[in-house]
Length: 75
Image (cartoon, rainbow, N blue to C red):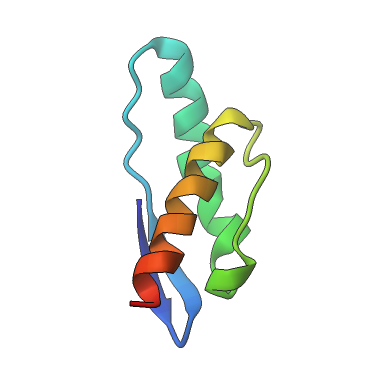
């Protein structure tokens, strides 16, 4: 996942699904297709999702990655 930030606000997001089975591919694809609408325009500190486009398990990985991005952005 790559976030583009401007003044601590998300202006774009890129997600590269990495499925290992057909079910995972479906949910990761849905998540990747819907995450932009859920986070673009929000401040980095406000990012947290629980379900995006019917995918709830992918959200945990997103929130974990966002935590790492927040830490790196403050360095």
